[in-house]
Every structure is written in structure tokens, then in C-alpha cells.
Amino acid sequence: MCRHDDLTMLLQDEETPVINHMGMRALYEFCVEHDINCLVHHNATRTAMREKGGDYEYLWEVKQVLDEFPQLRLIWCHAGVSRRTHEDHHHEMIDEMITQYPQLMIDMSWVVWEEVVLDPATSKVKKGW
Image 1 (cartoon, rainbow, N blue to C red):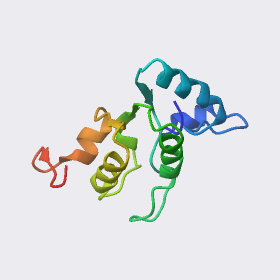
Image 2 (tube, rainbow, N blue to C red):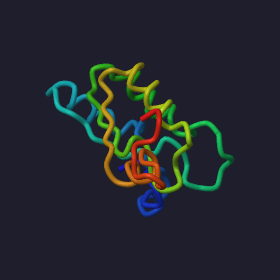
Image 3 (cartoon, rainbow, N blue to C red):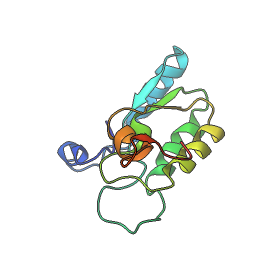
Image 4 (cartoon, one colour):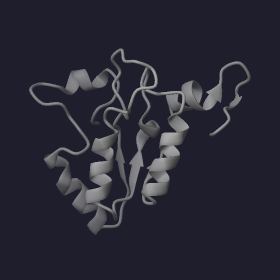
């Protein structure tokens, strides 16, 4: 578990757990070598207050891993979403990511389904998803 909701604060001591940490390289290499999936929790952006419509602050960290390990079959838990960590156009970012990185898979469980994909008024999938 890397940057993920408020749980990250429980894991922090002197270092923030991140998807592109050097310590994760051996895991990625193992997964590629043995042709197995790698499932990682990592938010696309921060949970703290921010301006709506802002950039995905941590997306570059995910891209860095996918660029360095193009054969890695990464499952991005909750589509990089956590409580308070998505934008209205999140589906566009996900579309761009899976287009750019064909080995990337998206997990749609937990709050991403209820809070991002579904329209709360109709309980139907929002346009774009």
C-alpha cells in the first residue's frame, strides 16, 4: 500500500510510501520475470484540500513505474481513487492511462464505484464511464 487515503499517514515514519520507491523495483522485476500481476494501492492525487480541476498530483509516480517497467501488468486499485481524491473528469484520465499503458488494469471496487462511477441521483453509470 502506497499513497492511499488517510491510511498512508499510518504508514509514514520518515518516508512516504510511494509506488515509484526504489524498494518496489524488486517486486516489479519479480512480477515481470514470473509473468504475474502486481496489485498496488496508490492515489492519483492527494486527500488534502485542493482546488477542484487541479492536476493529479501523484499520477507522475504511476507513469514513472509503467514507463520503467513496460511489461509490468499493474492493477491500479480503485482506479487511483480514495475518499476525497478524484476529479469530475477522472474517467478521462483513466482512459488516457489505459490507452497509453496497455498493460495497466483498473480495479473498480470500493468507493470508486459508488462515489465516482455511479450517479448518486439515478444509481446509473455516469456518462463517460
